[in-house]
Length: 427
Image 1 (cartoon, rainbow, N blue to C red):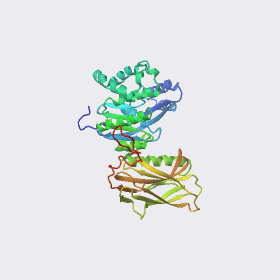
Image 2 (image 1 turned 90 degrees about the vertical axis):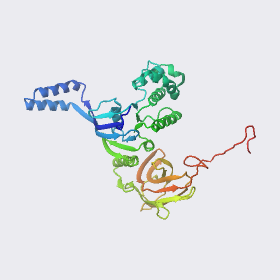
Image 3 (image 1 turned 180 degrees about the vertical axis):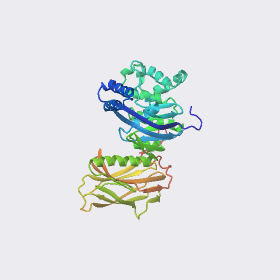
Image 4 (image 1 turned 60 degrees about the vertical axis):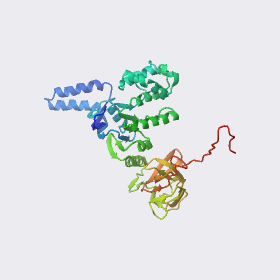
């Protein structure tokens, strides 16, 4: 159990270096040359020559370097970064799968790590037998395993296959069973690495609900993934990893903003058009949101349910840019997109300037909502390059409590028919 007043997780100066060998024979020659350099230290010239010969056959890759953070009990931390930035390596070190080259990790409490689900199963054992083995490895005693077995089997929902050898399972079935074991161990620290996309859509919804239930009990969460909305929804803090180092740490929305900027900066650099930072986001030479606000110049509105929200913006899109769109997003207070509109932009004159006005009814539940504008080049729905991002704090507040009319964030048209049992349906 977690010690009183102790952080759930302390990561201090963690680094991981991998040795890459020039040839298979280098695995033999490099240690011999290094030892020989030590034996000949009384002849400095020879020792240096042997040392250089060893280094020439050895290459080092620093996957992580000097990573530090502290995670308090019940806190949720998101880790984001491009592929190859060291995210999965860091989680494997924290979970105890990999030893760090430098630094140390101190964890207080039981860890459940959703990493490479199903990789630890014995294919010759049945699903039920693998559950017993894995649950025991995770720290459950035989009585606890017997008590939770039915719940694990029901959650995995693989039917009679639970008593068949795992080698007969599909990859999805094995992943679902492994996920079910991990989330039924009552962990103090839950590590999630891109593991929320398990199974079909129904199982994904059940997996998300289970993780929310675990977090509601005060479990500490370490979440890694490319799903930025999940980071916004689950996490109070976020870390941006780049090249194995912590590039930024802080509020999830600020870290996500920096991550998005770096993604577009990298893509634009390859096209020789690096974006420029602004106080409201970023812009490029090909496009910019020059200004935006509500009608009359306000940046915040307080209004009744269903009242009109009118956004006015001044845009610049270079005349030679084709397939340009402006995307208006409506966000909640955590930055999760709720709805929005993709607007195809018409042809422009030589100045490239456009005036845009978008109006909609605030048919939303009581609360505060934010607006964000993006200029994108989108030849298709699945391919888009962001030219400019504008997030200047435009917001509006709906003051009416509309729960009597609908639940959730916004209403959907519904036909309701309530009648006494046995009565004819209403016309």
